[in-house]
Image 1: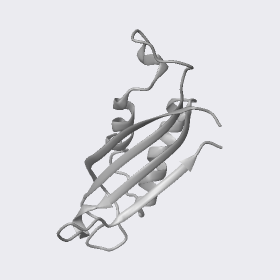
Image 2 (image 1 turned 90 degrees about the vertical axis):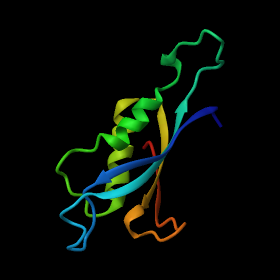
Image 3 (image 1 turned 180 degrees about the vertical axis):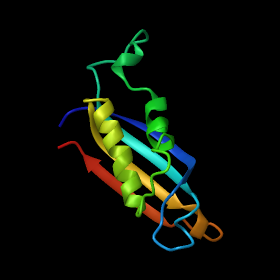
Length: 122
């Protein structure tokens, strides 16, 4: 088994065109998106190791907040798939992506209603 570095960005609130019901399809819905990415890492991290040995957290944030404008995702699974593809394409060291999406508009009180989507590089 190889060593992996896991980068995480949690609880981004993003408005996304998604849903299947008529009341959902014309306005963006608020989603809470969390991403964990496993990447290959170097043998050691020293005090002067450059950023290129890791990955910028901004890349993860951009994958969730930079969704294509005007595109309606029927299912939130499609949102998660898009995020995974974006991260795989952006860096060949990415081995696994986990995306957690919570649909805020349908949650009551402290509920978390949503999905966890995991995709591994093939």
